[in-house]
Amino acid sequence: MLKFKNLRLRPLMAHLIVTLLYPVFRTIIAEDHRLLLFTNAITITGLVMIAGGVIYALFLHGDFDISAYFMKRGMEKEPKQTFRAYLMDVYEKREGAFNYPLFVGLVYIAAALILSYFFI
Image (tube, rainbow, N blue to C red; front, top):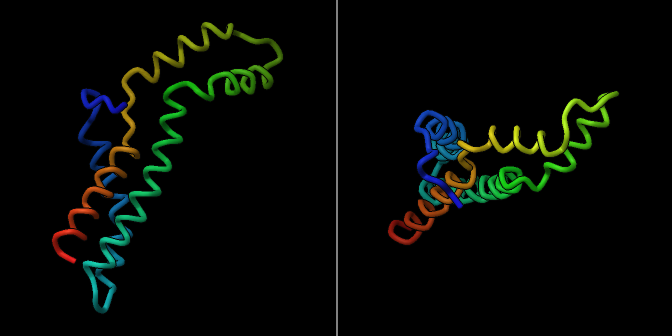
């Protein structure tokens, strides 16, 4: 679930600017049907962002913690911390995280739906 209290403006703007580059440039270089191409481009970008957001959500929920711990432990000759201590450190680092790719992807899909319903 998205926790909007962890939403920060600077990373959100960075995600929006970077992911809007392709749709905007695709629209600028188009000869005709610009709105249709823009809508298609933000739909595709939104779907890619949602897929990335789902993977990032799995990471945030701790689905890869066991494998990450054992990969880290396998590289060391002597394990420095127990699995429980490792989990506490990881949960502490993830406490304030927000899933920007999922949020931006949902915003793009909503924008594409609104544009296609009202203007195309």
